Image 1 (cartoon, rainbow, N blue to C red):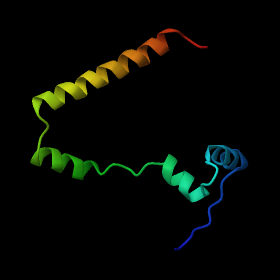
Image 2: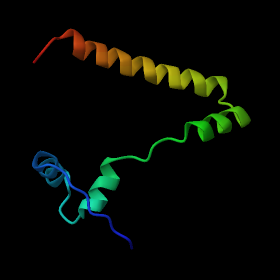
Image 3: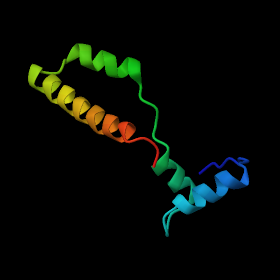
Length: 80
């Protein structure tokens, strides 16, 4: 396996080290924490080819609405 050396500051190193699980390498921790970017063009092409049903769209909208309600409740309480 090829490797690449990177430079990070000490704060970043300590954050990563704290986030790393017991038997996990730094590479494994980074792969777990940093998700692959979404291929938007590919996703859009798939949605055009096989669009969501009305029931699925309603379910997604319901979940988004619930997340917004929770976020708005947290924001309305002000600073902790």
